[in-house]
Amino acid sequence: MKRYSAFSLFTEGLRGHRGWTPAWRKATPQPGYDAIIVGGGGHGLATAYYLAKNHGVPRVAVLEKGWIGGGNTGRNTTAIRSNYFYPESVALYDLALRLYEGLSQALNYNIMLSQRGMLIAAHTPTQMEICARIANAMQLNGVDGELIGAEEALQRVPLLNRTADARYNCMGGVWQQRAGIARHDAVAWGYARAASALGVDIIENCTVTDLLIESGKITGVETDKGSIRAERVGLAAAGATPGLASMAGIRLPIHTYALQAFVSEPVKPMLDTVLLYLGTGTYVSQSDKGELVFGGGLDRVPTHGQRGNLPAQEAVVSGLLEMFPAFAQLKLLRQWAGVVDVTPDSSPVIGPAGPEGLFLNCGWGTGGFKAIPAGGWLLAHLLATGGHHEISRPFDLDRFARGRLIDEAAGSGIAH
Amino acid sequence: MQIFTCPFCGPRDETEFHFAAEAGKKRPIPAETVTDDEWAEYLYMNSASRGKAQEVWLHVTCGEFFLMTRDTVTRDVTAVTSLPGRNA
Ligand SMILES: Cc1cc2nc3c(=O)[nH]c(=O)nc-3n(C[C@H](O)[C@H](O)[C@H](O)COP(=O)(O)OP(=O)(O)OC[C@H]3O[C@@H](n4cnc5c(N)ncnc54)[C@H](O)[C@@H]3O)c2cc1C
Ligand SMILES: [Zn+2]
Image 1 (spheres, rainbow over the protein chains, first blue to last red):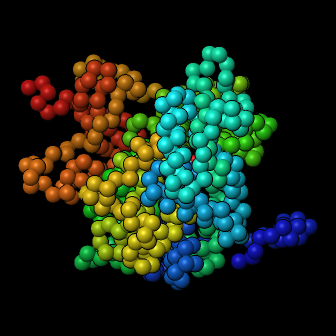
Image 2 (tube, rainbow over the protein chains, first blue to last red; image 1 turned 30 degrees about the vertical axis):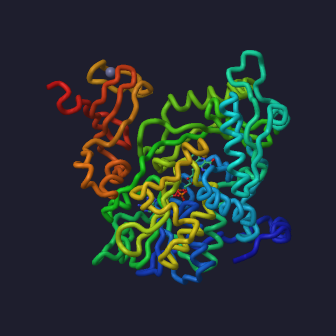
Image 3 (tube, rainbow over the protein chains, first blue to last red; image 1 turned 45 degrees about the vertical axis):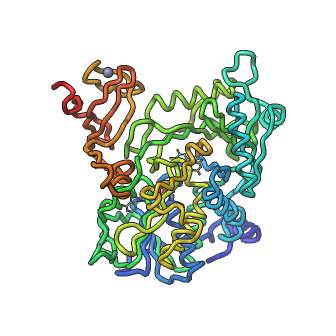
């Protein structure tokens, strides 16, 4: 792997940038592997990287039906944070955040992590109490998080609507300084490049059409490029996971919904944090190019179509205008949707399922970008050792029968 | 904006409707003999299938629960019917 550095950039610049080589190999499927990962999103690619890196598993393949990062990973609004409520969740998301903090170095790929802080803004005394509860939970869990008042909130986001007729005045909220954003494609590409350098085969345009099972054990997958054998298979296919799992007779606690995102035309820097408004459910950040990147709640109609509906668009856009009336003058550049895999407790499903050798990493719903390094780390652990890492244990599918849900929807009112 | 049809009220805005559950689940009884797995299956597990699906929806404004048959990719609705026994 040719290392990227300021020096290589400089010398390439002198040569007219003609010396760059592809970041990862285009592989063709071998007849068999030690482990196969279905889905070349962030979670699948990170899994492959950690399988090779942490566990030295030599023959690993990632099978991706389209192009890597073309699913939710390339469609998300990249808010990264670990302000969750339950200790299990904090352990999971803070592992991810800590790995993110060193990821550009570890992968030798600039993922443009910007820890610009995130404000969850409250508008009523009751919401302030909920924010206090979240901030307390974060501190008890050893994660940075504090309750801030209106004055500090308005200092951090001076353009917030504070006119007399504002529907939602900001009373303050939860502030996490280590939260922020990163470049989504760079996360997928960085993991792909580093994994490929360690010998992982990344196979695009390869759709898994069936799971091969013999006497209760997984033996491989059927694809549109033929069958490929492996005794360990990991599913990391977001909204497509229920369909894949059903090939092994597994039903999952997942509904699939479209989640939309929006990008405005670029403007001068005017928002240097990530902001989520409890009142409107809209959240927004400004990209390095100056575009406002924003989104909100789910479309309320279960779907597998990767496009959004109008009512959700109206709700999100009107929410943004309530927060910043001046934005009414901006034009929308783009709008799109991804199909997200939503669980009843808004927590992921990580662990074995069905036939021996089959493992799941799904159910990330609207908030799994921030978890990519951890999801990959933990699924790699499962695939390599056959058993749980202590951090993934609570997220096993068995929590639904045991009644041990990790209800972050109720606990921290999660949104992305 | 998509229009869904309530069997009681007729065509209305999608915003008036709420997805309730996938159709066809039967509550396992008697409770004393139901295992944790059966109960979890009933409460939480879904097909979330691509394509044709039959679901229970609620028309929030009138309170009617009904069956909707639709395609989860194209979003075409092919049938809406009252729940079994509703018009008996
Ligand atoms: C609009 C939007 C905004 C979001 N905002 C945020 C946010 O701000 N912060 C955050 O943390 N999260 C956010 N999320 C959620 C986040 O994007 C996802 O949870 C995360 O990217 C999931 O990653 P993944 O690798 O599991 O799935 P994906 O990136 O979707 O990858 C799954 C891959 O599997 C492939 N696949 C499917 N079926 C098959 C098959 N049969 N064979 C082979 N390959 C297959 C797909 O093509 C896809 O590339 C958002 C999501 C959306 C849609
Ligand atoms: Zn009605």
